[in-house]
Length: 139
Image 1 (cartoon, helix red, strand yellow):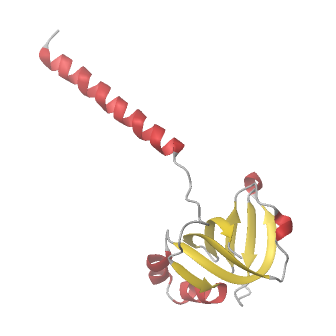
Image 2 (spheres, helix red, strand yellow):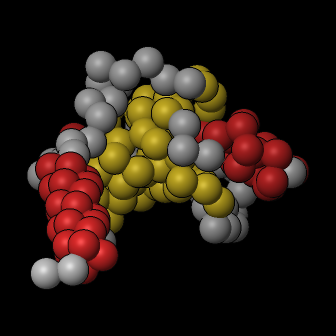
């Protein structure tokens, strides 16, 4: 076998192993335990929504992919796709709220419409509503 062919085969095998290793790592990567993680910001649902409404790009830079602890009044509780629980926090705006998504194992009976709650989650941006994912109840 020619030397350049051996080198090409070895390079392909190494690239394949690196790809398989990377895929295995991301497949088995666990979410952060947000109860044990310190929040980057602590803010009310009203103030958080106002910051995004005032200057969305600055708020995305500040809060994007950060852990936020938000306190607000529960507006609604719904089950969505794949049984994911969504809790909406009032912001004083009829058009926008803070939507917090919980894993499917979350119990909706612990949320009462109109009660105050503190939730910690990872901010994923603003699409008419401020979105927090992988949420946990703090208080």
